[in-house]
Image 1 (spheres, one colour):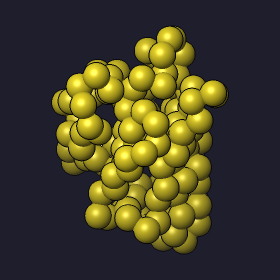
Image 2 (cartoon, one colour):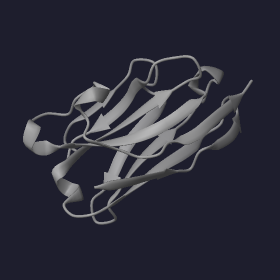
Image 3 (tube, one colour):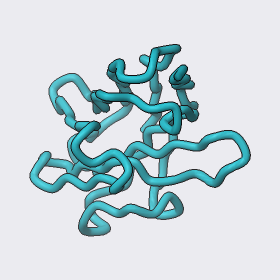
Image 4 (tube, helix red, strand yellow):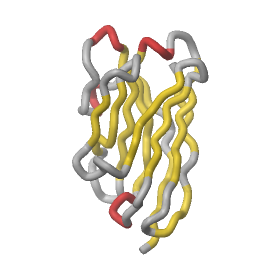
Length: 125
């Protein structure tokens, strides 16, 4: 599966952005999806994940209550709604896919099989 992330940009602190990740290829609905981010000089970190059927969601503590992950299997797209953005949310955001045959959603980047190219989110304070 190929992934294309979009929706990044420059936003003021307290603002909102919605990221999208469009998947091409077959069987999008058989993949769990995740969002990760990487800030300059830091390691890639988990942000949020959603199971193939949207029945299981997971969030990093740092974004819980501010970010919402969702998906539309009919459109082969996963979203990340980001509200109340903070300067520390500045990073390149990546979407990733993990085959559901491996079980539950995972929070670790190495578990994911496919990655998008990333979209830059810059939050100005």
